[in-house]
Length: 228
Image 1 (spheres, helix red, strand yellow):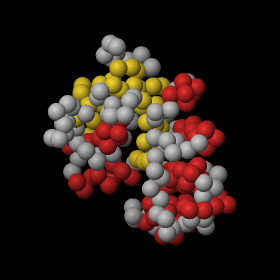
Image 2: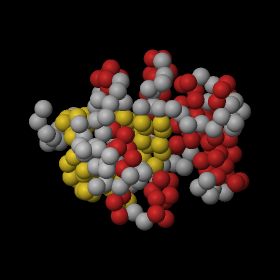
Image 3: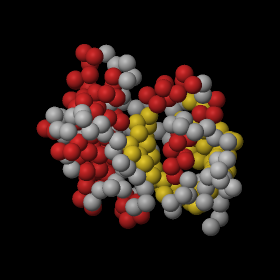
Image 4: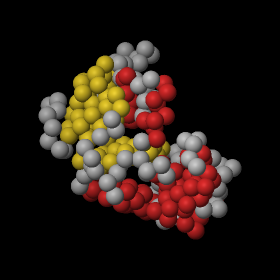
């Protein structure tokens, strides 16, 4: 589903590469944590995966797409096969929970007569059926993140990318959102979660990819990586 082969990424404004020589593979149905200090390269990896940035060198493949060779008109097709969840929710404040989710369908050209049913399905999946008419300001942080997850799921993507999805949440909300991500993974969706929460990572028993200064230094699946 996701494959990096000797991938490096450099920015003109930095003397050091953001990523250097990354090689790993994430298969169907996996749940993988992406960890590392701030600036280690986690967000850059996610940007490469959803074609916000191209690799400087190497090969990135996500859900059948070669990222470095994508034409501009192919990017929306890739992104329809990805769900993306951010730390800061990114909900539209003037729209209800249901309207925020519906918007993700409208921009991808979904048939209007299918939208209410699809929105209701994902709100039920994240446990927020009773909150469909609530605005973001009327929801707790954990509930807002659940709406963001529902929005990411509404197009039935095979891959869900979560960038610090619990970073703004208290412990109880963190556990709730993480359990939801596990439940989503149990349905067969690949989940890649970038996080600083090492306690959560240690307790979860899932695969870990650890970055340091743009290099992969640990893969708990046992792939060969750079020595510490």
